[in-house]
Amino acid sequence: MSRELPPLNALRAFEAAARLNSVSLAAEHLHVTHGAVSRQIKVLEEHLGVSLFSKEGRGLKLTDAGLKLREVSGEAFDRLRSVCNELSHGGADAPFVLGCSGSLLARWFIPRLGRLNADLPDLRLHLSAGEGDLDPRRPGLDALLIFAEPPWPADMQVYELARERIGPVLSPRFASFEALRHAPADALLSEPLLRTLSRPQAWPSWARHWHIDPDALTYGQSFEHLYYLLEAAVSGLGIAIAPEPLVADDVKAGRLAAPWGFSETPAQLALWVPKRVADGRARQLADWLRRELARPGQA
Image 1 (tube, rainbow, N blue to C red):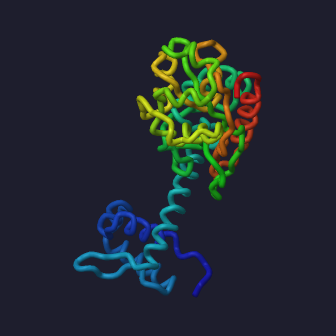
Image 2 (image 1 turned 180 degrees about the horizontal axis):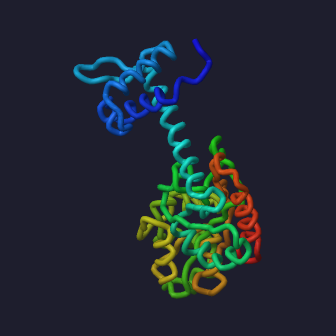
Image 3 (image 1 turned 60 degrees about the horizontal axis):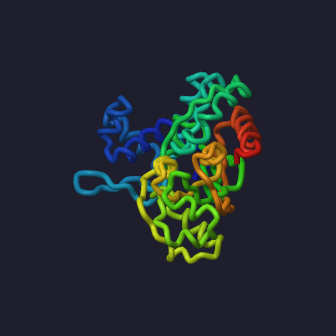
């Protein structure tokens, strides 16, 4: 069997037919005839020495070899499209698109955006918010700022920025604030705790750190995203739990208090950068983030 790559046109025809599950749709997508796609698939099968499709009624079905090639070729063409898009839109002159959660964007990044723009005027940072749906592998994002636990993905350059520290916070407006501010951590067992569906492990992780049975915790109102949870805490509606950077400004300003401090988790705040992004801006941003997180009262 040849060790050379098959013809690109044959791979393109196969990838389109496999992705769309139709030779006709592939032909329409590639702006060629049905026969042209069929011939290219035949060329690819002859080059590889395997069948990629089998007959199934009036249609086609991918063989095991076809399924394997579809996965790899789809990923390869996605990466090619992404890189070509970057090059065609100016490369290093294009904005550096950073994805992060809406809560991290609103509560930590935006208050520091003026300082970042002053420190890194050539970065041209563009911020994209999302909740669990951001993936730097796909076109449109250059990097992702995320709280996550190792091991790190093999296809990412990961810049570790700071260990995650979480802790309960409550507002002076909360009805039980005076009774709780000097109470031991297990006093929270008698309080309904605010929680977020996007971070269900936060309260149990904190409880285990304090040798409290997580099953003994009582939960109250739940929120879809961390941002809404913290807004509820600032409004005095209950006790929330959050990463320290997201509440540091509120604690400093007295809008929230953290009587039990913050404890480390196995997670890190990290910058994930696809290995295809290699223009130096990611390292520049990572260095700035580390410095900013190390500022007194910021992390």
